[in-house]
Length: 313
Image (cartoon, rainbow, N blue to C red):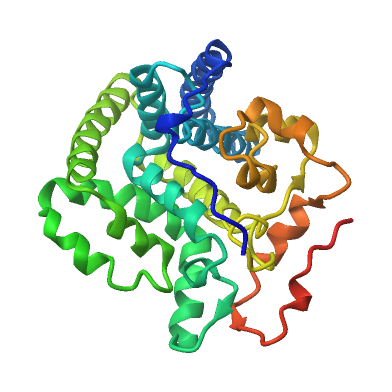
């Protein structure tokens, strides 16, 4: 298995596209407010459905910019980098610290037992694995990232040992094995601050919670299912166990090149602005094809791993 690259970014701050990233964040905030307001203004679902699709695509980019912050690529000033991450996470409705810890762990655990959602291993129960898998990809990943930070202010730090008990087969349980006491406190502060911002936004805008739930429910499904699309069926390798996937250019812009996931795993500190040019476009698959594979149920872990060799078309 390939050597795990260093992903904790303290020694590798870049942020050379700082002003471009700040502009992207500004446009995302404007788009978030405009789309949600338009959803409330127009009652026709012929108008609302395209708006929901646009919202889901735009919010993928919100996560991608958060991801840049995890790697200290959004801005060279750590305080501004963290602020960009918190603003994006507030739009996303989650804790940036929780996702940062998870993402650093993902680079270490990729295609290990903890991140083989496509396979059932010895020691796992098939029914439980399949149920949890579908709960996760049908929206549960986003929902857990929304609900858990709201609970943290009311939970003591000592619960992390209990929550981490299934980390061998569950990368999200692995988050809690890596959460430090200061991370726990940051999640608490982020949750309270984000909840206050959301309450203010809803009060100023007059948005309705049911319609917001529909918008974020659609996003929860699309984002959660797309989290596994780059890795399922990939080789069992912590770095090479990922795919670069093709998207139409406008969608690629919305995603901020996040679809070039293999290139990112090879070079975790390369900014999103450079991923397309750094990738071999002949060594890709279409994202829609990989996304369809996500909905296949997990199968027993194969003895012959040759079928996991990469195929490009």
